Length: 73
Image 1 (cartoon, helix red, strand yellow):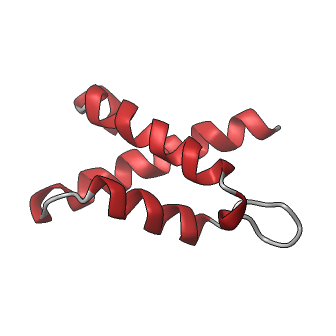
Image 2 (cartoon, helix red, strand yellow):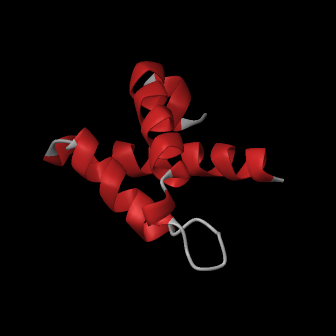
Image 3 (cartoon, helix red, strand yellow):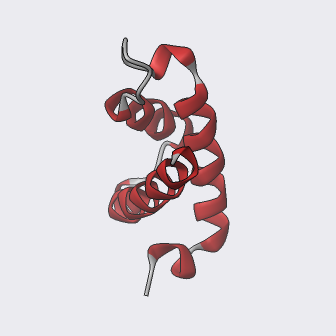
């Protein structure tokens, strides 16, 4: 079972924010690759998960990041 199946609406929100942050040129390394630390920080600040949702946030973030990276190949 994936985290996105547990919280599909929250996943869609995070997925949208991951895509926007990953496409932001400020969140890219010199070689053009995504700086996931910066993306993580941007998405976390925008989403501002409560203390009891942080673990779910990071599960959903990982799934969204993997989905995004799959579009780059």
